[in-house]
Structures are given as structure tokens and as C-alpha cells.
Length: 121
Image (tube, rainbow, N blue to C red; front, top):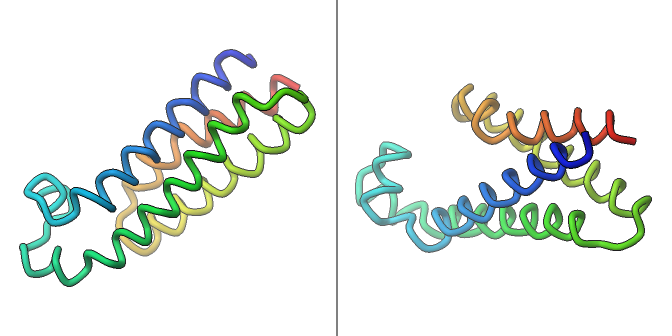
């Protein structure tokens, strides 16, 4: 259970690192505009907001990675639970405010990671 939980946490962290890159550095490019269905003008107008959002996704990724490499197991579990719940809350809000699919894409691995983390200890 713990290995599967850690794999799901790593996947969630990598996804959020990817969101950081997309939102901070690729936002006005063709791929981000296609993903978010934006015109070049919309992308440029929201560039700073997206970069801020990307920074927060980076913090989530860093916290999840920290939870995987920290030594004291009790503290690692606390970090895992905290950062996974943060991701899940963000996914719920994104599903409510933007589109429901966000809950599956962003929240799915985090929800599974949370379940397996809880089952492992």
C-alpha cells in the first residue's frame, strides 16, 4: 500500500510541476491556448494571473516531493496528508468554478494517493 501511495504522490507532484511550467512559462503559447480554449488576447490578458496560479502549483509539487524524501516517517505522513488534501481542495474548487473534469484530472491521483496513504498507516 505504501509503495502505491508513494507512486500516486509522485505522479501528483509531477503533474503539478507540469502545471507550473504550463501556467508560468507556456501560457501564451499555442498548446496552453488550445488546452484552455483561449485567444492570444485572452492568454496575454491573463498571463500574470496564470503565472501566480502556476507558482502555487509549484508549491504543491514541492510539498509532495518533500513528503516523499523526508526522513521521520510520522512527519512524512503528516506532509503527505496535508499536501494531498490541499490538491484535492484545489481540484474541487476548480471543478466547481471552471469545469468538472478538473476533479478527475487534478484530483484523481491525489484522492487515490490519500486513500492509499491512509490505508498504509
